[in-house]
Image (cartoon, rainbow over all chains, first blue to last red; front, side, top):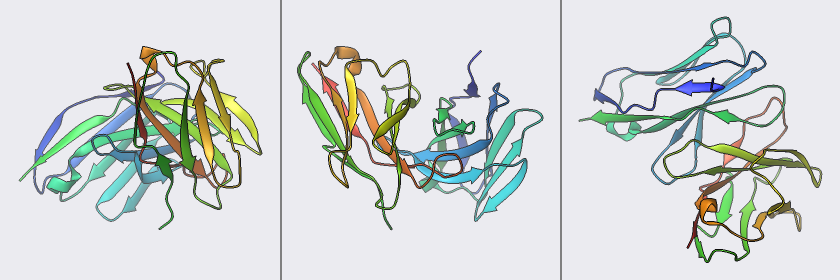
Length: 110
Length: 114
């Protein structure tokens, strides 16, 4: 079983819709959870960073962590064509090494 | 806004040659990392570095790989004798601390081994 599972998509949504992304994980030692956005052939850009169960909101982005179910989500409200990218979940235990999901490709159509 | 920079953006080399990929982490960061991403695959951890020592490395980071912080600003990844399967995007990242702090990534170096 992979440590971090993420549906690769692609996920296509119309402009203005809510984008819903999620990852599951198997390692209960993971304590820190991140979402990165990656445009084609570019480096991952940090969007959200959380370390406790619950919701964290930043502008149009909401990150949700459920440690009991080993499940994390990212929601993007009022999606724009510029949100079209690959979204990577990443997580780590108490040390620095990040474990990434495969990434979900999101396409927001005008 | 401070950012991680990497050079070159694209490196083409012949199999068996040595390559050095360079990174300049964010200036007040103390922890440095290298990751790689083979085309179409997920980002994979290679190595972490703190206080001039490797703190953790993956099984990918074998004897062909080495890292160095030759001065106060640069952080390098050397691949001694490149193989075809080393072709990938290599990302440098840095963070202020280790456990609790976000890692910020550079734009990557695309390595093509012919």
